[in-house]
Image (cartoon, rainbow, N blue to C red; front, side):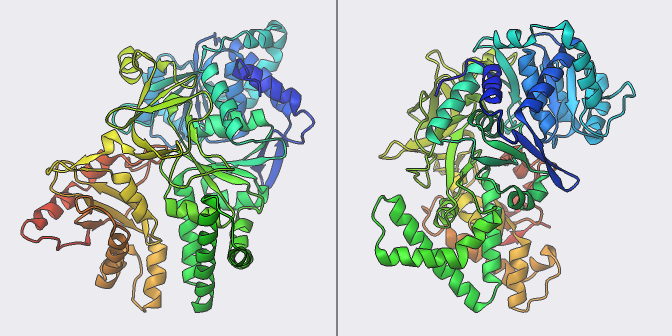
Length: 611
């Protein structure tokens, strides 16, 4: 497959190659799915590019997009690139203070917003944005001087078309090293930095990914991760479009289950939280379904996992095991597949480690989840498991054209055409991240297995060093615990302390079902956590899953907190990564009390809860 020189070439090549397809994009409105053809998309992109130029945007100027996934997001992105502007995607879940930082830091001249709620954020901070000249609203906007409706913007562009006859030629004349976007990092350890990504970064990453996972015009995907996320931007946007896959935009995150059934995708990109919730829901329904149903489910699960382990090991499947797998598929797994629309070829998981237990469960069900690894700074894909030879518990080997090696301390270093041009207006931070030989220092720690597949062990900055000098990697421990249906979330803490502890957010739905079976009176999670039997059950679930840990890794305290971590609460980044420092500060009294109680108590006092 030829590598397009630029995203502009990638776009127009796809429009030409797939012009006979029914739809390039699909979206749901008023209860029905509507198609956007390649020709219609190209027309809107050109009109939007004309509109940008007419409003004064010049090559290199920054244009922000503050919106959830929708066709207008794709239109504006391609229009910015055609006009040789640099777009700045911003998560619509961010509060105004974070939006202000990104708009000020980038010097954005235009901001596209999805709706009045997003415009209100701009209204609050506009007096602090001297560079911002125009705000354009995708929906719910009136042409009142503050917000320009998108339809009016399109009309301005269409009227201006005769003035710019060389638009497409100028766009195609862009150079591979030209910056096309600033994607701000999630800011787990400080202010977000603007990652400058180029045409070459994205185009080489798209083509390399398609060499590992072939995607074609017979495929359809459901776009549910934010397009602001580099994983969705490259994978669910450019890669799907280049491969000819029809892109369906989920209406909201709350409607994903319905949208999946209606669009019947063959490919879905997600983060571990998506698969964790699906897994927990399946387990909860099986356990609450009565004795016979429960026995059938767990027999099917065990048969499926034996089959999966045999296939993944590259061994022939014994006849009896093959029969058991077919029965399990018919009794249990086909219902899971039907819930996804019935046509899934594979899922892809990124952004954070996925529990091997959950990955094996999905593979056994005929719904393979292929893990990859990357960062915003690497456009983002670095490694990726293939459909033909996946290795559960790893993130795959390096994709074609990308080099990966490990530093002496285990840090993962990456070099290749996918490595960013640098951090916007931060040359010192860029030099710290990319050394003189071109190696990008990821900050992640990993190891290669005997087949050359990479396994991520943790973030360097997340590693816990106990006061006894032992290093503890929290993410693998958290993933083990989150495999329990009784656990919604978990965070391991304990840096510079005598031992690690674990904060656990219980899963109310699972606890309620369990309590009902035992005729315990519980009305909400708070009342449930007041029941010693419930607390003991959660503790057994947590500690039972950690029984194989080394002594120094084992959390000595289980602290229960009622409220899950959220973006709005500040404990999660927009990419759903936990901000450990924020969590530790928020529950400081609870944590300090647990360590104080441990003096003279040994390991007593487990199961403490937030008060």
